[in-house]
Length: 377
Image 1 (cartoon, helix red, strand yellow):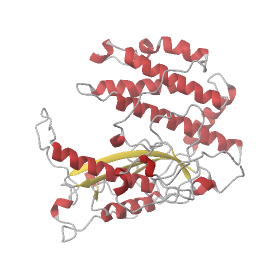
Image 2 (cartoon, rainbow, N blue to C red; image 1 turned 45 degrees about the vertical axis):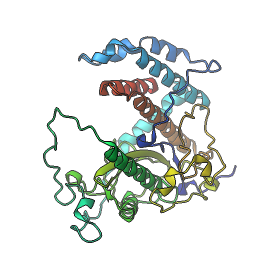
Image 3 (tube, one colour; image 1 turned 135 degrees about the vertical axis):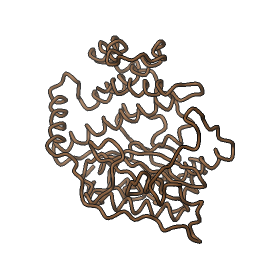
């Protein structure tokens, strides 16, 4: 396969939103055909004791650590499979060199704020946007007091749940739109992507939730590389190999829909991104079955890639081959280390979602995420 202008495309590696996770299946147990390296087996034997020595607090769910250890074992298997595919081990000089070089690059060349245009709030209510269109903070930037006492929980009825489902489906559609290879690409600024999202949300009759929330100045959060979350879009052009997370939320019929995706800029083959379709249907196609997708191609990834629910079958963006040709060893290591990071985040998210159940505690969700993070180092 010849080298292409991969700067125009990206890999949608974290496309399935939490709002679409009702059919999650846990990761399979380690396959007998893959032998875990000794350092994974030795580390996992003491995972519970060593990891919990970091905390001085008492957490009730830790009295039963079976599930968390199983999560850790699965994630260790997947991390070992990834490293084996790329001929990396934690005892390998190449792996150590790559990690150290990426850390040094981040320290010496961190993401810095670029100029951005002034905040553009939406106009007060009018015929097109009645008062019910706006969340309470839209004009003032203030959240106001909570509507319920702190020790009360609101149980939503079927009408509220239906409205939340619609808002979530729209949020997912908007997320797909800005993660399209024709939008999130090298040279595009996150501020330009923010404007695309804002316009698309308004066209679909929704308010972009981040705008003016606690005075947040933009309509989407864009977090690049070492920026952890809630990054503010600005005029910095995206670069090949950037790891970018987009948080998309919208306010529709009195409720919010929210989801997030992480992409690696340029990590897809050009011939596989040309037929992506950015439909402006405000999510109408979300209800159709997977068989109605216009693509018959499948995503080819390395053996350790979780083949659970991503890329999601109901995703209208056509996801195909990852980048295979690199201009230098340094470029290859940048993409491979980014893929490993994204894979760990995917697994942590899925295990966290699987831990959500009636009567469960948030500490169980955190424990599942923490176990995956530990397994990937």
